[in-house]
Length: 252
Image 1 (spheres, rainbow, N blue to C red):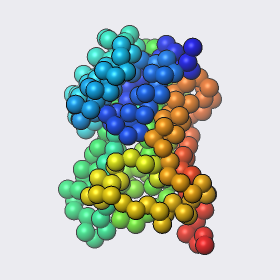
Image 2 (cartoon, helix red, strand yellow):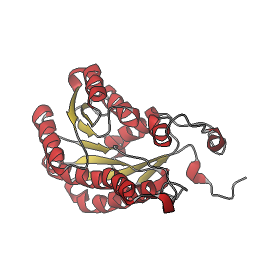
Image 3 (tube, rainbow, N blue to C red):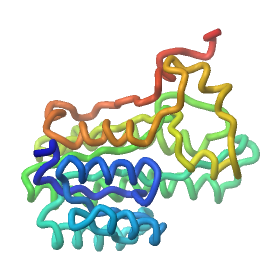
Image 4 (cartoon, rainbow, N blue to C red):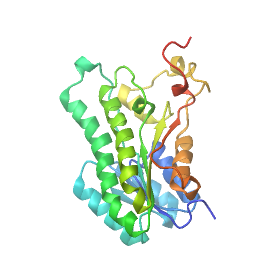
């Protein structure tokens, strides 16, 4: 029996990277998972590979109606909804003075508004199930700033704050809400945002653990926060960052 046996999870941005790793880990732990993304081919392939324990649904997290539809389908198909992992996100690099309003709003709409809509959409089914766990994927940029990512940082700080408000409001319904703060994780998101391969070694050597993180390490934290082992954790922020937030800018 896995730690998530009997639980039903909905994971956004789950076609690849951190989201796909979470979907695999959750199924391995005994959960049934609704994989959602806008990258349909990869999402369908992942759900098929996971077998009867998974389904796939297209979900643009900025679309209110699509949230209603995917939550309704998850409950109808799997019988309940116990866990939401708000993982979908965008990253955009630009200096503040060169950040177009359209790019800023696009990042905020996916990262921040998508998380808000997700949390709001699952309150009713989780309440009906007697409780649940919401895991919001923020970032180390939700704990401190970094040059060139003003929109991303704003959205990830917002996720951190919304997590705490939701935890306070939903605790008496048995719904726990926590945020994960990944550091440098080896996924395609950074490489895609920069337009190609990126040499991360100058930053990696400054980390306590001297390596990039793996998507599976974020998935492990998500599984912990989703399961009953974290039953007294809510409103918390959980860095998975190789020690990035243990230091400050004056480190030699």
